[in-house]
Amino acid sequence: MTPVETPQDLRSLTALRFMAAAWVAVYAFWPDLSGGGAAGQISPGLAAKGYLGVELFFVLSGFILSHVYLAAAGEKRFSYKGFLWARIARVYPLHLFTLTAVGVLGVAATAAGMAIDANILSWSSLPANLLMVHAWGFAPTAGWNHPSWSISAEWFAYLTFPAFAFVAWRLRARPWAAVTAAVAVLGGLYWIFPQLTGFALTEATIRWGALRIVPCFALGCALYLVYRARPLRHPGLCAGVFACLMLASAAFGLWDAITVVMAGGLILALSCLPNARAGVLASAPAVYLGEVSYSVYMVLTPYKLVAVNLAKKALGLGDAGLPPVVWLVVLVGLVPAAMVSYHLVEKPARRWLRGLADARAKRTGASTQRTNSRETRLQPPGPIV
Image (tube, rainbow, N blue to C red):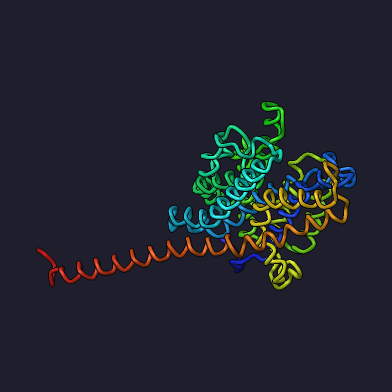
């Protein structure tokens, strides 16, 4: 598929994951900043558009899963069962942990007489959250660890990945046609969805989150075809241009589709940047932050519930926003909290679940080998005439 050798680990894309998570975190914490408010009076564009960090994750997901699994799917070497187990090991343990953490905090706050959003402990939404289908329209309210709606959307993309791979594999000889089609689908959905619902698709969570990932995931798959066919020339320059265009379109409040397409261009450019030339993006600290980005995203809500309330209580602020310096300290504190959850929950749980699959595969392989050996011994010495 490709005229050049491509590395399995695209380190700059791993680092980009942290930047996407940080963008979402700034968006989530912005209303807690004194003077920030819902409109974001200091930096209205980038802060207000931080929800598009999720779209960046979605495009990255389509690109990376295609990088790892597309060839196997196209060549009929793809194990759907193994793929889904690997995905569950990747996302479910931390999802379950943070859901439980929010539940414990909610119960404790209620017992202490503190006022909390009644939807946080939405027991009618709990089954859908546990099954990771709460962004498919099965959850009546946005409760528990709300950011996990995007994990439900990812789960939808994982389950339907063979369909994405089927289309992508057949378009592998026409990568730019695939990108053009993906951009057309994305633009069409982004235009028609608000006509039907009254709000943008990029603002959908519980009600339409599963649909929200589809055009972004498809764009990531299509961009991967371009990467495999002919990597961009001058990828560093292209990455800088696309990054500026993405940030500018967000800062000036342009149509979300433009920002998402520019984000796709940034992903393509960074993927074409060799690790040896990626500089700080390929450094060990940047890659490590990328590895903990899922924890950054998932612990955001329980961390915010505790950290913001403690800071306000310590300073006697009541309902007022946090001073800028305190706000920044609270925001940056999300990273070490994520590191703790990564090393104590996410990483060991993923290793354990994958170990179970490896052990089962070894047992199955040994059993198959013994059966084949026995069948060989039972075969007659010559052909049966």
